[in-house]
Length: 477
Image (tube, rainbow, N blue to C red):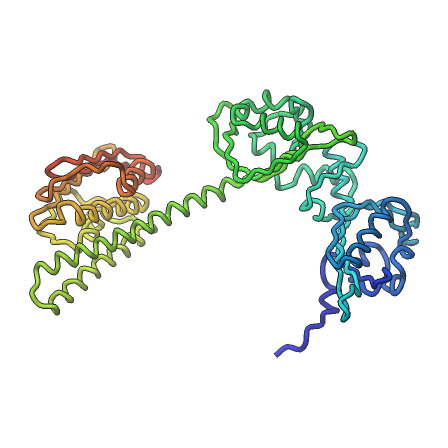
């Protein structure tokens, strides 16, 4: 059992700066991160009024004091996104005053009588971030973008060359576009990688990235410039030419178009910042596809169980006989699923896959003709799904749904190492072509066409369904 939590120790070890004032705005606590940030010791601040410890006049003093008094008197959190405030440098660092830019949040703490007894300040020194923006925009004056995530990020001080390197090496892509033609003024490495390292600085967007014009991005930039309102895009699809003379490649991006507003209110350009989330989007789509297939597979499994139950009941006259036969067929169905799982990791034989998928049904009604073929793992997995779908359909609607029906399976391997396979049904109910393509037919076509790059044809002949396909057995494709 652990002892009581030492909150004073927790407070002091927080990695971000915190300090606490009483109602008279006198220091009553500060953690080490705060002391390090302002370059003072606790002995110098204990019981001292804030504005005696850090004297200031003018707008900055007024804004800071007003925020603290609002938090104290109104009893609610007050936030200052940006506030310039110079602090006195310690003597061992040369003395004098240093201009700093801060982001601060003031949280009131009520006393027993309900009135605010203390005010906790959470502050961040964002001077380096603002200098980075100046370097990025190539401007002398400070540009205060209202991007709270960036403003509150905090960073250690650095020289302009270091900040430029930080901008260039940032993991998110960044670019600055200027003027009505949206000319590239600056791009970082991540942006260069996104667009295939094209030399775009100094070029208008229409000339630098002509493929994006008809995709609506120029019009979107025009709107941001005209309205001075930022645009935030989530998982936006864009087709980019990422290699010289190469095809367009679809990428998905999270990004923001942030207007660069001048002191007179005009918009001189747009800051572009974002990240490539293509892999995340594709993974999500794959996950949704797998869930759809899983849901459909569960439904098919239940339908197969129903078909097995009906066929088993027709051939038995005692309950105990039915139980034994039914359980045996369910076990065979389970083994088929296990074999499909195993086939993801190693090759498997075509005939065993067929035998396992068709094990729940009467083998006398299934004719297989073809050589022993060892399938690569990818082919085995896809064909296992195809055979499962065809078998389920046959049990629900086709040859295996009636006692007289049969399956005729024939295959061969061409000299080109292509597998040619035919699944044909006969003796079942008359076949009626579906009014629309169901999930099963789409799964078969995708498995053969998209995943295995083969050809497939499904014939809904009146006397019985036939499915013919050709796939490559080349393990390298």
